[in-house]
Each structure stands twice: as C-alpha cells, then as structure tokens.
Length: 354
Length: 267
Image: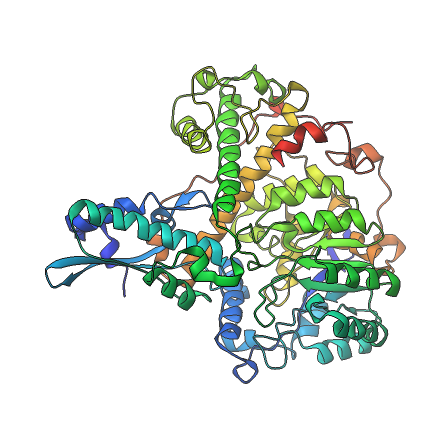
C-alpha cells in the first residue's frame, strides 16, 4: 500500500520477472544481446539514483521481495515470465524459483506461466500439467520467441487457437501478450497487433492484456481496444517515461484514457527492468500538464484503478474495502467509442484510417 | 571506428555527396532520415588501387531492432551510395550493420547483392513494399495531423469538427505543410491547392460526421511515431555514448492544443 496526502492506494504490479542472465546460463551471443538490450532500457529510462550495476542486473533473487514489498509499496505482484529457451540454457525466467516464491507467499505473488504453441500436441499436454501444478490463472506469451528456425508466431495460428481453447477449458482466463520484433514472414509489420484483435473477438471469455500497451503501435492498439471490451493495456515499458519524458507519458496515458477509459489499464513496473518504488511515487504525483487541454485531468480514483484495482478485479485478488473506489457515473469515464457496441456506427467510415 | 568521419568539416567532396545521399534514407517506422537519427556510425573512403570505395557502418538502438527495418535501411543506403558512385565514376560501396542479432545474415546479403529474399530465405515471402506502404501511410496521417493542429492553433474560430473543409491552400506555409505535401506525393495523393487535407490512405475525403474522430486517431498515430523516435534516440545514445551528438533535434510534438478546439467524447 502507498499513502500520500491522506489517500491510500492498493498497489498491484501486474508485470514482474525473476530472470537469470549470468554468464553460466547464456546459451549463445543472443542471450547476451538480449540482457544488454534490457540493461540499456534500464539505464536509459531510470533515474540515475535507481541504476543497478550490470552484475546485479544479471540475477537478483536476493532483493526481489525487498524491492517489491518492503521498498516498493506493492501489495501483490504477478510473474510474467519469458522463457527464451533458445538464448538461455536454463531459460531466462526462473520458473521453479518464482513458483516456489509464489507458493510461499500466495497473498503477495501470483505466478503466470508461458506456453509456446509451436510445441503443438506435446506442449498442449504440458500446459494441462502446468495449469494444475501451478494453479494458473494467466499466461504470458512472447510472440517473438525463437524456436529452431522459427522466430515467432501469431495468436491466430491454428495451434495458437487450440492452446487458447485449452485455456478456456482450464480456467486460464488472462492472456498477457508481449509483441516482440521478429516474426515470419518479415514482409509485414512485426509489431502488428491485428492477431490480438482477431482472437479477442473470437474468445470473448478470455481477457487479453497487451503489454506495453501495444507500443510501438499505440494507435493500432487503442483502436482495437475501443472495439474489444476484453482487451486491456499493461503499462510495462510505458511507465518509466514518467521520469525521462513526462510530456510523452502524459500523451500515452491521455490517449489510453481517451480511447478506452480508466478501468482497463494496469500498472506494471516490468521489474527488474525498473523498480516499482519510484514509479508508484511519481505516478501518484503525476498530472496531465495543464496546457495539454486535449486530455482530461487524471483523477485520484483513476490512479487508484490503474495502480491496482483493475488488475485485482481481473485476478480476483481481495482488496480491503477502504482501498476501493466508489463507482462513478458511467459517463465520466466513458471511453471514446462505446465498447458495448463493437461494430458501432462510424466504424465503417473510419475503417480506412485503421 | 569512431564517428569522426561523419563530421561535416572533415568530409571530402565524395564523402559530402555520400552523406547527402544517406540523408535521403529514411527509417520508415520513425519517418526520419538515418543521418539525423545518428544511425550512421562511420563513413569513410577507402583507396582501392585507383578507385575510391565507400565504406559505411550503420548502428541501431538495440540488437533486437526489427530485422526487416534494419535490412531496408541498409539496402536503401547501399542503393543511394551506389548512385553517387555511378555519377562520379567511383568504386564500390560497402555497407555494414554493426551489433545486430542479424548482422551476419544482413551483411552477407548486402555484400552479395542478394536482395531481400536472397538474404532472408524462408522468412521472406514476397517483398517489403507492403511494409513500406504501411509506414508511408502512417507518416502521411501524422503529417496531416501536425499541419491541421498547427492551423487550429492559429485560427481560433476553427474546431476539430470543421477540418473536413480545410484545403491544402488553407494550411499555414512552412515545414509542416511542406512535409505533408511530400508525404502526399509519396502516396500518389493530390497535391493541388484545392485538395482536401483530411483524407484517408487512398485520398478519399473523410466525412464531416467522423472528421473529429479521424483527427483524434491521426493524433494517436503521430504520438506513436514521435514517441518511438524519442525512445529509439535515447536508447541509441545509451548504447553508444556520444551518439546523441550525431542526432539532429526533433520537435517534441507536444505543444498544447487550445481547449476550445477539443473534440468532445461521443455520448
């Protein structure tokens, strides 16, 4: 919980990881390139006071609980692992270690696992076993994961659909999707989010949380989110702009609020790329600059929803009554296009812009 | 390898021509020249027994930048430099991409003039023209938003719902209008004074009933492109300290919009 100026906020960090990128776990040069890329994200967008040493950044299980729950105000956090088996001998995300932490602290941690539809029938059986052993409520998919000669997949691939159908059956209702930059064929936009649009329409009982709110395709994501009520925005990667480029952050959050309202946006630190403490503090202090009159001011209730209440509701995580917000009149936070009418008037005329 | 060779005062005449040619090569996703993004790591002449070859190294913000865009910028660079060499009767052109996960693959393909399909094999289906078109369209949409928002700021009586009536002749003269005209030309859209500004990707005018929403959507496209550009520039400078000195300033694109111009959310 975070408290500021007499207001208390329930904090749910919807995207954390426990990775191991130490030299002994690197399978090849790409493992090194991947963690170096993460480290540049960390250095480029964190305040200097929050920079970690490179060695600390490679593996940090000793400080995870402190960074999140003692220093970082987090009430509950969700592991969203990337496996990256082609880059790391024992995987990038440390499955057993994270799962053990989640089992030891069920009130504080939820473990989501990953699947890869290119393992076809064998992977599907594994998913069923994992769902039971790990008590999965959600999965994290990295569609740019390499596997053999393949450098990615789409959610609309036939095997992806079979896995999504299994999720429905197994009660895994939250599908977190991270778009990465490599996918076959290379002829098209690698960050295209159209496959999320398609499966969100087809599997309306699943929730699709698009990590880093579709960046670098924010506009395509916003447009999809106006039409699909089961599409959510994870703020991983977008959050730290609050420090380096607050006016850009204002525009991202302003666009998301304008197009989808404040009930489908999730706070995420993307720990350990960034730590939650300073992100929570800055976000509570943040306001849309006064001269950006195209966006409505961010209310305290909106901040409460984004920082924790939205994700808590999706994951059925109990929130003390005094940290809840009173329901607002619907028109105050109504998004730009009514999601209840996904094929609303105007869509056809706007289709050429999409 | 340093960036010294890219500094204007140290360039030879050939290098100056080469630099200008590289200035026509765009990062399609960021809608900006690779020279102003700092993606040109070095540019040098190499004496090759009477002929002068050009050797260029390119660099990107991360190892995992999308390989299709990386390839496009490299092969466009090679084409642009080859034209300079042909015009001057010069030697060969060597373009190399540094520190990318696909550097070996792309550099082999470039050296052999293997083309996109020859470089990527089974990962390539047809060509990259559709990809280019997607981003030319986004660049046009963003340019239209910039020019219209500038006009809205200058003319208080105009609102976002009125922009369907704006023609090219109504726009303020300057960089924003010039950029829009260039992007319209690149898409084969009308560039005459009487052409409506609020048009879709195919040049069809946007209906008055949805033009406010169209402008909001165009704004989100512009914010996405500008934001990506700032992120990529920052990462490049973190990855290659000093690279920021090679980057031209980019408009923040965040100037205010007067409150009376706002589109109300539909009820």
